[in-house]
Amino acid sequence: MLRSADPENATPASDATATGAEGERTLVTRLRAGEDAAYEELVRSYGGRLLAVARRFLRVEEDARDAVQDAFISAFRAIDRFEGDSRISTWLHRIVVNASLMKLRSRQRKPETSIEELLPRFLDDGHFADPPTEWQQTAERALQRRQTRERVREAIDRLPDSYRTVLLLRDIEGLDTAEAAEVLQVSANAVKIRLHRARQALRKLIDAHMREDLE
Amino acid sequence: MTCQELADFLLRYLDGELPAPQGESFAEHLALCPPCKAYLTTYQKTVKLGQSVCADPEGPVPGDVPDELVEAILAARSRA
Ligand SMILES: [Zn+2]
Image (cartoon, rainbow over all chains, first blue to last red; front, side, top):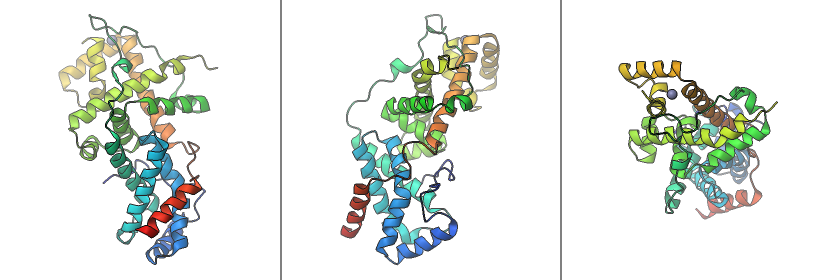
């Protein structure tokens, strides 16, 4: 159902003995044969990457781990249907996003924090109440600082669930509006509104940090 | 077009979904209003920053999966 925005980034870089097309094919063969060691290898090779994805959707560590566990169990059951023309990493990535969304849905009972206070405010005549100013650095330059990367991650975590989820699906996972609407079971218009508000709120949350004189 | 309207229309403008007459007033306002210009560029930088930190290879611990989670998953498999 979901595709990864960037399959290359979804691929464990150095930690997997199973990476490389050849290694993956061998691993899949061993999984289908029911070899216990192959299952452990799969979990150890890809588990960390999947946990990082699940943590973006689910703020509670226990929920993120549950989603990863659910994802692996689904993957184990479906290994016979895995088609060799996609990468295991891409396939698992898609499964863990779906598992995270399911977990999130089962958790969404408590009222969300409001996004209103993170949206821009305007005067009666339509001017900005706090006129925005430019950030001097380019995004590339700002990203070189660990502190900036941490600030941005924290800010994403602070977004209310229904907004963060849309931001992750559209901007990070690379789904288009219709696809995000389908997996979230909301209208395309609701996806657009939430995406815009999520980006506005994120902008507001990092604005002070980005305006600091960093050099 | 006011700054407030411009901020509301921003996503549709960037996605190329704003109909021509509104698109033109948007562009006109933008050319003359430094706060809106700053809003647009910082909005775009925000999107880029969000995308980049999530793709960050040295982000939070990819590759490191807690042992107890590995064991729980393998135990769940043998129960299944
Ligand atoms: Zn303006």
